[in-house]
Every structure is written in C-alpha cells, then in structure tokens.
Picture 1: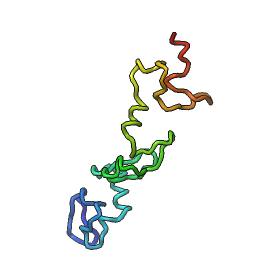
Picture 2 (picture 1 turned 120 degrees about the vertical axis):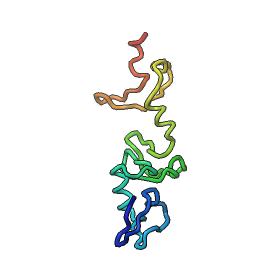
Picture 3 (picture 1 turned 135 degrees about the vertical axis):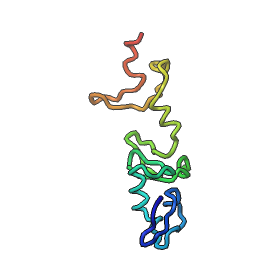
Picture 4 (picture 1 turned 60 degrees about the vertical axis):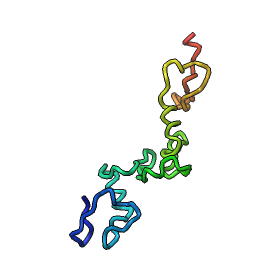
Length: 122
C-alpha cells in the first residue's frame, strides 16, 4: 500500500503510475515515485529495463517502439524479447552447424560467434 502525500488515503501500489490520479495531489503519478518503487522491486506491474535501469509498463513490451533503449548488442530491451532470448541460448547441436545464431561478442579483440573456430570440432 502507498499513502498519498498530506492525506490519510492509501492506495494499492498497482495503481501507482497507471495514468489515473488517485491521490489528491497527484503524487501517485509522479515519475520519480514510480521509478523509485520500481528500482526497489516494489512494483510488480512494470518491466525493469536492463540496459537503462528504466521501468516501463508491461503494456509497452513488444509494441513496435523501443521504450527502454538499446543494449550493448543494439537490441531493444522491450522489443523482440523472444529473439534476444533465442540469441543468448542455443542448443549444443546448433554450434558449428554452418548458421550463425549467437550475436557476436568481442574476445581478445576478435568477434566470436557460435561458428568461430569450428575447424577444431571436425
């Protein structure tokens, strides 16, 4: 529960940052309150972006607009989540199968993928 400023009124934390003024002074819609509670993990109805530490409503996930910002791979945290997960985890059988499935990472100044140094597997 959240207690509104200068009031005895309490509202559910699910109503914070929902676009509706529930508190007399509108403090339940202040971005700073929403942000602070999200970072503390006290809001369950929001998605915490990993690349920017920003918190967005779950309705904004996969809405064709990058609300979080891009990560180090150039992928948006809140868009194409299925692709991001697939690109981080592949089956063992997919390694060195002739198709690059993992995003390149830099190791010792070189770009490495699941298809790097496959000649060692033959």
